[in-house]
Structure formats: structure tokens, C-alpha cells
Image (cartoon, rainbow, N blue to C red):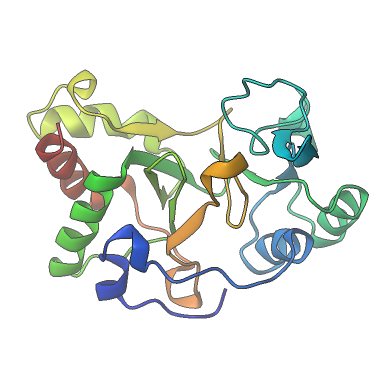
Length: 221
């Protein structure tokens, strides 16, 4: 996770996002807990059934194959201990890596097109970004300080937008995000648009990013 991705690269089209390192899911989950102090928990995984990758949950119509919680009590399983994380993934090495929001970070989720527009705008404004993921569902998730869920609706209204009019969702307590290199069935893997680095260990507040994100979502409607 130590590589620094220059801002100009982050604001490029999705096809130019740097490929993920080849670390195993186990080692990556341990690193998230150890280096970033993020809580992690193992989700479902992919299994080959008649030559097709299906979700371990058994639902052939699974909306997020291999990338959702495997148990209803997932929130109590999440751990910030690298030792415990290693033990959990040793039991199921192909389990997805899921990160609960509302603890060490919240996530502001927007469409991919709006996300890249916002990244370019933030770069021009020289804003400090936290990590940002790009999912196979063509969504981008901006990591911000916890508490964003309570702030964002009023912040959006203050900018002249109705929260319901924008495709902008804030994930906080009780929600989660899938972390790279988790795969969504045949759709591809979650990637970092902005990788976690020592430079972005301190996350921005939602208030610092919301203007660019709301503007981009408004343009993307």
C-alpha cells in the first residue's frame, strides 16, 4: 500500500487505474488492519460451479457474488487485530475483504463518471484526499472521517441541492464497503482509484469534499 499514485493518474479514465499488487487476500486483509488500523471481516467467496464462478451464499441470482457478508452478525466479527484477521482468512483464504463503515471512516459513494469528474476538480483545488475505491458496479467510494452520514444531507442542501436529486450515498454505521482486491463474480475486482498511502492516513472531513462531489453528481444527472 506504500505506492503513491499521483493525482493526475487518479483522475484518468478507469482503464488507466494502476493494477493492484499481487498479494493474497489474507495478506492484504492483515495489512489493512495492521497498517491502516481498519476493522476488517471476511465475506462470501467465489466457487466454481459447472465452470461458472458463483457466490458461496448459494443464491444463483446473488447481486454481489463473492462480495457481501457471509453472516448476519458480521458487525461483531469485524476486527482491527492483524492477528485475528490472519486467523479468520486462514480458515477461508478466498473470502472477500469487507470493511465496516462508521468506525474509522465513512464512505461517500457516487457514480464512476461523477467520481472522476470530482477527482479532477479536487486536484485543481489541491484538496487532500483519503483513499478512494472504484467498484465493478461503476461506483466510486471516497473515504472520509466518521460522522459524514449526519452531515452530508445538510451540506448538500446548503449547496442548493435536494439530497434526493443527487446520486450521492453516504455509508456509515451499519454499512460496509468491499476492499481491493475483492472480486464481484465475473464483473471484475474492486480497485483503488486513490491508494492508501502514508500521505493520506489522515482522512478529510466530508465538508471538504462535498462541494466537488455534489457538483459532479449534478453534472452527471
